[in-house]
Length: 194
Image 1 (cartoon, rainbow, N blue to C red):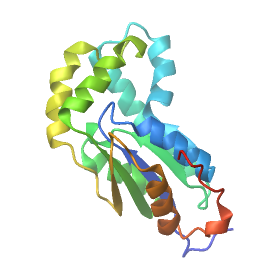
Image 2 (cartoon, one colour; image 1 turned 90 degrees about the vertical axis):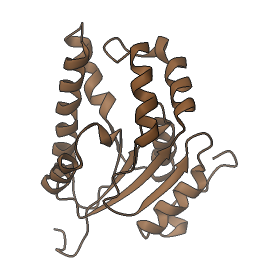
Image 3 (tube, rainbow, N blue to C red; image 1 turned 180 degrees about the vertical axis):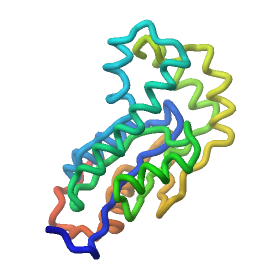
């Protein structure tokens, strides 16, 4: 049984496509042992089943995956902290707020991957061959550039901004540890590379 005073946290790893969210999420999951939910991991099995997937269907599947994330988080116990890797700006902030409310989230922490337009385009372009069919292709690059010029964090709670070109994983871990009030000795030591 949980106390009514216990807060239910979620950690958003947010940034536009190709900003390095997945790499950071994996590092944080390894460090803290928190479970991970990613928009793409929920969406891509359906993309494969319903291929070919056009841009409209991709977006519909993304919206459904987004709702599934909050259903999963809502069923988790209060002490379970999920790392959620997604570009949260693909829908209005109100949709995120509704999802958080439905999941019983009382505190939101956000790691924002700041990236320049040039770097976002270069990274996305370099990954085109590895992207699953159904994701936007090279035609998306001009839209991504514009998105990188204006994208902002959701800012529904404390935000730590990281430079996507060289994210400081140790700083991100230390920040999360402080925000979650975790004892230092409860976490494994950071590796020299991380």
